[in-house]
Image (cartoon, rainbow, N blue to C red; front, side, top):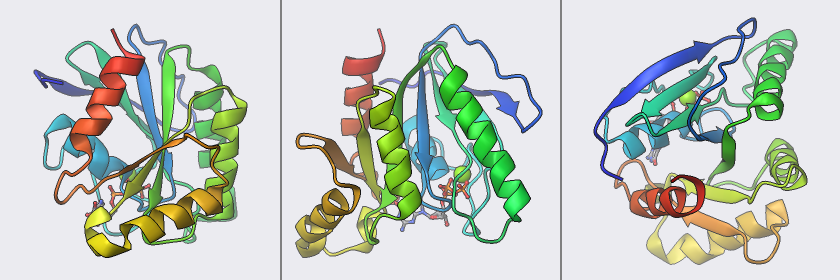
Length: 195
Ligand code: GTP
Ligand code: MG
């Protein structure tokens, strides 16, 4: 994908009306701090257009990035952030759910999992939801730079077992530090979901 222009076009909070966009949407889901906003920056070739933070719970809204007036990359708030109140968690969850259920342009929901850790119950729930809704699940194993090359197979296996992935499910290892995996993700988006 040649990035000609990117624009944070819409930002939605818990009380917002969600936009009815004219282009395909690709959404990025996953635990807080897993690297959703960092991945979106890497895909857009921008250093810090999407706000990122070492503190989990950075993205608290649904952010729609318009790419070339061709598609939207949709940054979702993360789940499982321990420091927000139960009430807040429920509200964010409802916002994400409302989006996932109502968007008419949503083509794919990528699920990001930190390559170092066992998937959580929330990760499993998200994966099951994606499959249950009839979307092809695509797993992005983030922070690839944090493990040794020799550990890769073991970690991918842990992830496949933890999520009980259906055979043939795509797992793409990715690092926003080295950008490894970036081209593969764009190629997938371009061939499967747009145009
Ligand atoms: P929320 O908005 O809180 O849901 O988090 P997020 O999933 O958007 O994560 P974000 O992109 O803000 O990244 C969280 C932290 O992880 C930041 O400190 C990033 O610099 C770091 N990070 C993200 N991706 C990578 C990666 O591939 N490698 C390394 N080493 N660090 C990463
Ligand atoms: Mg974020």
